[in-house]
Image (cartoon, rainbow, N blue to C red):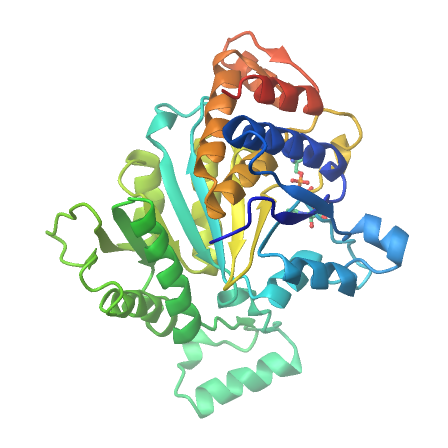
Length: 394
Ligand code: NAD
C-alpha cells in the first residue's frame, strides 16, 4: 500500500505491560526508519486511547474518537488490551475486529536465534493466515440440558434427518458457520501475499473429509480462487507441478497432518491458509517451535486497513516491573513497515534482533531461556533491550 513519506500512524498503548513494550517498539522502529531513510521518511506517531487508559480519561474502553481516528489512517498498531472478567464488558479486540472487518489474521513465524528447546528451529519459517470472522467463534451455542438445546436437537432429528445416536438427550451443540464470500476473500489475501513475497509452497488445511459443508467447502473454495483470472497462471494446483519464479503451488493438507508436519518437517510449507479455529491451533504450535508466542508478530488485515499487534496478553503479573519482553510488538512494528513498503527498515530490525541473540542479551525471560540451555546471557530491562536492538541497527 502507498503511504506518504511522513505518515501519521496511530497506536494504542495497551493495558498492563503495554505502557512498557509500546515505547520500546516505537524506539526500535524509529531507529530503523532513521537509519534507513535519514530524515526523508519518518513516522508521525499519534496515541489513540483504548482499554484502561480510555476508561480513565473518557469513561469508555473504546471511544468513538479512537475508531474514527483509526479509520482515517490506513495502518495502526496496538499493545495488548485486557477484557475485565465477569463485568459484562465485551472484548475490545473483537469490537475492533468487527468495526474494521479484519478478516485475516496473519502470523509469520520464523526463528531469529532466541533460546528454544526444539532442535533445528532455523527450519521454521512459515506464515499462518487465519480466517478471523467465521467458524465456531460465532458464539452460537446450545448448552446441554437447556430448552434451546432440546429444540435444536428435535429439529435436527425430526426435520433434518439427523441420527438420534449422534444427538442423545443431554447433547450440547456449537454451530460452525463458514461462508464462501468470507473464505474466498481470505484465500485471495493469502495467495497475493505468497506471490508478492516469493513464498512457493502454500497449503490450505482442514478436515474436509469429516466436515464437508464447512472445512471441506473451505478447501474447495480455495481451489476455486486459484482458478480465478488473477491467479490462474500463477497458482499451480497439480500435485506434481513445480512452481517457477512468480508462481506458487497450492496443496490440500489435512489439519492433523499439518500439525505433525510442522513438528517433523517444519520447512515443508511457506504459507498455511486456515480457518479460524484451525488457524488458532496451527499458529500457536508453530510459535511454540521457535520459543513461544512472545517472539511472534501479528497483523489483522482487512480491506483498506491493517492493525498490527503483539500476540500475548496484558501480563498484569509483571506489569510495571520493566521486565516484559517487547519483541512480539516490536516485530509487529517491523511487519507494519513491510506492509507500508518500508521493507529495508523492517529488514534492519530483523538483523538487529538477531544480533542481540548472538550477543546473548535480552529481557529476563530471554536470558533465563538461554541459561536453561546452559548458555550465559545478560538480562536487561524492557527499554534497555529496545536500546540494545536500536544500537545494533546498521
Ligand atoms: P498473558 O499473555 O497476559 O500472560 C500469560 C503469561 O505470559 C504471564 O505469566 C505473563 O507474565 C507472561 N507474558 C505475557 N507476555 C509477556 C511478555 N511480553 N514478556 C514476558 N512475559 C510475558 O495471558 P493471559 O494472562 O491469559 O491474559 C491476560 C489478559 O490479556 C486478559 O485480559 C486477556 O483477555 C488479554 N489478552 C489480550 C490479547 C490482545 O490484546 N490481543 C491477547 C491475549 C490476551
